[in-house]
Image (tube, rainbow, N blue to C red; front, side):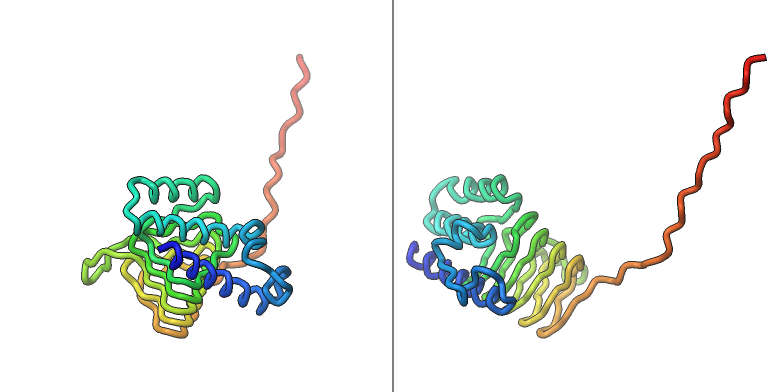
Length: 200
C-alpha cells in the first residue's frame, strides 16, 4: 500500500518535471529538480503528496485519518479534496489554491489541474444519474474552470480558464468560455454642488 503510494508520487513528480521542462520552467527535471527538494518548494506537489497519504489512510481503513488529512489540506492549502476522489498516478496540480474535488471525481494520468478548479457532484438533466467528472488521460483544466456532474472529458482535451462544463466533451477538444465584452468606459458624472448661501 505504501509502495503503491510512493510509486504514484514518483509518477506525479515525473509528470510535473516533464511539463515544467516543456515550458522551460526553472527547477524542472532538465535543470536537476529532485523529488525531495520539489516536495519542499512546490505547493502543488506537496498537495499531491498529501493526497497520496490521505488515500493510504482510506485504503487501510484507518478510522477518521482520511477525514483529518482532508481537513489539513483544506486549512494548509485552501483546497477541499475528498478522500474518496481518485487521482491516478501522474497528475499535476498547478498553484493549488481553491480546488474543490468531490468524492466521485476520477482523474487519469497526464492531467493538469490549475488553481480554483471544481470537479463537483451534479445530476445529469436527462438520465437523472448523479456523479462527478471523469477526466481521461492528458486533460488540462484551466484556472477557475467548473466541471459538474457525471460527465467525461475526453483524452487530450483542454478546458480553458473560466469555463463552466456540464456536458461530456469528446477527445481532443478545446472548450473556451465566451469572450468578455469590451467597450469604452464612460467617465463618471461629476456632481455639482451649490456653494452655501450666505446668511441674510
